[in-house]
Amino acid sequence: MRQNYLIIKILFVLNYLIYIISYLITILINPGIPERKYYAQFMKNKNINNNIWLHCKRCNIIVPKEYKITHCSDCKICVREQDHHCPWTGKCIAKYNLIYFYIFVNSLLVFIINIFVTLYCSVFYQNKFKKTK
Image 1 (tube, rainbow, N blue to C red):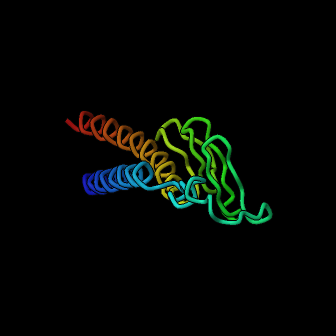
Image 2 (cartoon, rainbow, N blue to C red):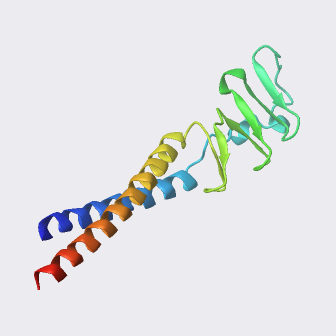
């Protein structure tokens, strides 16, 4: 039983590291905010064809339609292929940080399950140890 308990502890620590690293990557990586070159003040001299470009009046940005931008009312900025604004990270979840967000949420789920397994095993091990005395 002690060997199994050691394996559970190792898995617990590894999962915790994956959880923390994926969270940090999710909050630190650019979710898909268009580059500065797309702001309207830099596009004044260019011919803008409405079939190719999208214009966001709130943040004054002109981007190609293929970017599929959405204006986030929480962040007050346009984001490429936005999935949602996450209150846990305080950031938009979009094109470039979506995979890391999925890893973060799934590792959180495994982390919580691992906590319950660890608690169960520790209580079971202690009760078994008390009965043998």
